[in-house]
Amino acid sequence: MGEDRLLQFYRILNGAVVGASGAIYGLLVGFAMLFPKAKMSLFFLPVSLPALYAIGVFIAIDLFFGLSSHTVGNIAHFAHVGGALSGALLTSIWLRKSHDAPRTLSYSTKK
Image (cartoon, rainbow, N blue to C red; front, side, top):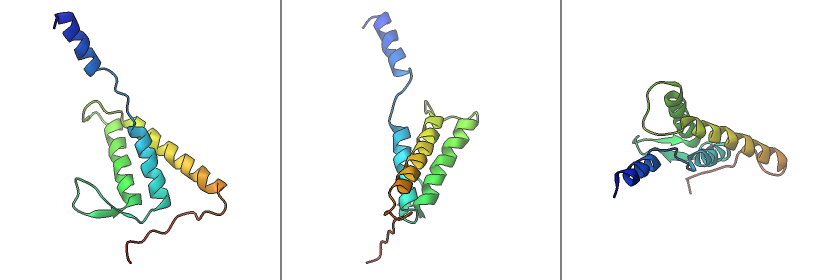
């Protein structure tokens, strides 16, 4: 592999990264809006939290890293926050337009 090809490969690996993490955050916020009391386990915490709080922790972490000088690699933190805001907006529009749907859905783990 020549030096030019190696440099080109390096630039590809360290260039802008495009992913679907903002869309995943939108789905998570939509889930938290529909099932706010559903228990979620975070992989770095040994406790289960209601979805509303667990997703809130994720968004707070992204806001912290986006606004501070600290970073954890090549992560677009504001893309996560934007995806979360988009998910909240779209879920609230969806709930408002579907008049028969309840504002939050009941979710129970008890049988």
